[in-house]
Each structure stands twice: as structure tokens, then as C-alpha cells.
Image (tube, rainbow, N blue to C red):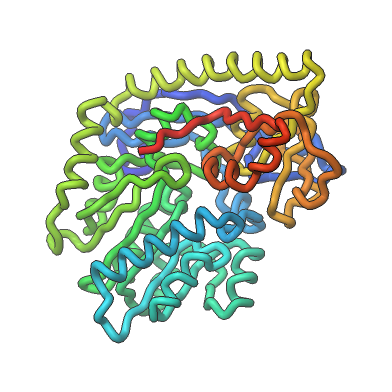
Length: 400
């Protein structure tokens, strides 16, 4: 293969998580065992430093019937409002006419925030369920994959373009980036929200590697991609959402000078070698250590007769379960708040999903797969904690 960012052929294996099912392919009970498996391997580009998957599951397979909903958690909704308020206050507060485009807009959670600030909003979302939910709330959402052709069909420019948690999904990476450039107003701001690969490694959060995430960015590497298409970062901030995400601002090349905090983030990557192969080879070694620790913990729970439920059924949780070889013998079920996963079974591990409101009893231990919402989960479950229910976090993200 060639590098998804720079077209180099100098790609080196870094992390191999084996063959795994597409992690969002939750199954009906009658389909258990029929799910296809695909290689889940990360390679490092020697020339541009970008880490990426070397195998692509087609986007039509992964996103047409996607059931993830942004609005399920208060933490994420609050974060989106924070981002919108910041962008508007810094750049467009006094502008009477302003428009915002959200790429991969899901159920419209981010669109709502900008609409409340007076923006004319448009979402582009390929999955039927979330796009239908957004349109039902009056949030105009085009059901499509965004790319240069989609941008031409929309035929207008926007003061703000947002891509939250989608820029690492892009099979048509260069066409999408061209479409963003062409759709961004002359003084517009492109807001890119992405999992920060440096922090993923620091957290040992390998579960954030799955087939939907084709690329894993640091600020150095995403800026290289943008510059190839006439855009450039000029600001970036590391926030704790999802265990550590970058909220970056970009615009047309030459229109803004880089901020000091963007420079500091890039320099910190250079200091630790976060864009170099050894950084990822060491990460791969630690994954195996965490596997042994977690299997030992769950085996001890089973030996002690404790009931263990998984808390949350996030897509990333399936990477963790399948990498660790955890099944129903160690975790009885996965509890979930999203009602659209009622009655389904996790791919690979075949652990059944149970909606929280349908639970008949509580376990002795919650094994928290949705660890990125740790504060919200602990606050919501104080009564259970006081009753002696243990909440075990297989990943403990850094706070800053």
C-alpha cells in the first residue's frame, strides 16, 4: 500500500492486533458466528510520520447502518457546546449572517449548538438512523458521504466547517480535504476534532484502534495532510474528551499565524518522538502487558464467584474484548444506554448487550468499557458504589 497522507511506500509494521470483526458490527443472536474478520494492523510511515491501518473495510460496510449516537452522553453534548461557543466568540460573534457545515454530523448534536448561536446549519451524514433523527429535529442533514463531489453539489461556502471524530475515518481522504477547502469561506475556520495519537499511546488506549479509524493523527501529521491541499493549522488545544482529543483550527494557507499553544504541542511531540517508529513499537509491547493484567483480574473475579458486567458497549470496547480474548465466560453482558442496541450481541466476543433500564439486578463489578466518560459514569452511579459495586477501568486516561 501507499501512505494515505503522503503517498510514500515506506511503511513499517508497528502494532498488530490480529484479525478482528468490524467493531460496530453488533449482531442479532441468530447471526452470531457469521461476522467476517479483517486484519487490524497499524503501520508507520517513515516519510511523514503518520500511523494508519494497512487494511480498509469499505466505508459502505461500516457507515451506512451506523447506530452510534452523539447525543447519548451529556459529557459529549456539553463538550460540543463548549467548542461552538469558543469558535463563535473568537471569530464570528458580531457577524449577522453566518453558516456552518458539519461533516459526519451524526444525530445533529453539534449542529444544535451552532443553530442556537444563530448559524444557518447543514449536516452531511451517511448513516440512516442518525441522519433521520437530525432531520426530524429540523436540523437539515444531507444523507451522503462528504467528498469533493458532494461539496460541488452543495455549491456554497461556510464560515465554519466542523469535522468531529470523523477525519480519521476517511477512505476518500484527499477528496474530502479538497471539498473542505473549496467549501470554506475566505476567512472561514475549519474545526477538526480528533483523537490525539500521542495521548492514545500515553494512555495505553489501544482500544481506540479499530477499522473505522483508518488514520491516527498528531498535530504534525495532520498539518502535513492539510498543507497538501492548501489549508494549514493555526491553533490547537488538547482537551480531555475521549481520553484526550485535539480541537484544532485551520484555514487557508497564509491567512493566520500559528499560536504559541500549537507550537508547544508540536514541539512536545518532537521531544518524545511521538511521530517516530520506536514510540509505537513500545506502545505495542505495553498492550501485551495490559492484556495479561486484565485477564488476570477477570479470572480472579470469576474464581471469587463475582458477577462482572461490561459498562457500555462502545465500538472501541470490542477492540479491547477481542484483543484480550474476553467472552461471556468472564463478562456476563454489556450494559448500554443506546436503545438501538437492545437485543444485540457484540461482534467477536459474542457477549450480549442489555439496555440499562432492562437490568434485573446489579453485578459485583462493572468493567467499564466506556472509560472515556469516567467522571460522568462515577457521578451517575454513586449509589451503586456506596452499595459496594466495584467500577474497574481497564484504561485510566490522563487528566491533562
